[in-house]
Length: 311
Image 1 (cartoon, helix red, strand yellow):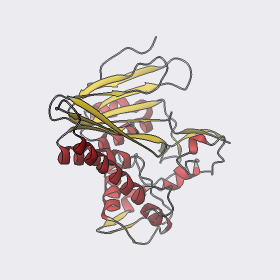
Image 2 (cartoon, one colour):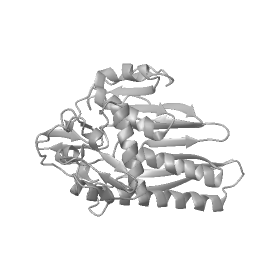
Image 3 (tube, rainbow, N blue to C red):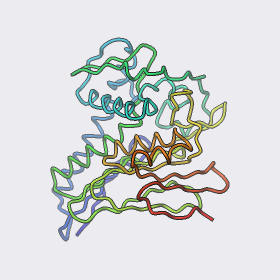
Image 4 (cartoon, helix red, strand yellow):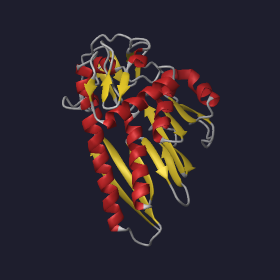
């Protein structure tokens, strides 16, 4: 049995594809196919849904709020996935926060590298605006005064799409890890996947999955200073600001990377109510509470290995 890892550095993160072959040596032909699928899907997603590209389809939609905009079937699918996430979380994981995430300073992939960001005073997302997003074959229309941001679902969708295509076209076991949104598919023994919240004193947690997704949402990797204090990319639509939460990071297990990332994002936004929310929905969750200093603690729901908080 052999393992091959393919990596691509985009969007200030690492997109990784791990392949497992039952043969004694890697099958170069299948590795080439897998890499082609990875690069093609990354490129398609960026052209369709990158808020940081003025020539992307989503930028065109955001500039034309109130009007129907012709788009690819890919963006129709991505917006539909984001609207389903909003519906499943009663609007908490909300795609209509593009103006708000821009206002707090997340205007480029390099936001966290800017020494001091000058934010704009944000307004809460318009209640229920996501219900007024219209999607039809080949076109999208968003309400006036709103802008789309698909950050809570797009990388999860990419992980699912890449993993499923690679598994189908090569027959290999695969893990697609798109910057923390992970989908694993195994035809034989399961994969051991690990959630590392990068909290001093808290050990990474591992779990075995065969065909499932795992995602981690947190404030550590995309966090920056502003003239009004620290900010991060997780927007609470109820306030229009970076979420005030007791969690440093939340990991979730689910049937897909997309649904796992929706759950992890909701967990961050729900704060102390999140473990019960996970339990009510039979979700598996790992929660790390830390303020950036001091004593950390962890909470688990479901099948995560139960380890004590750091001493």
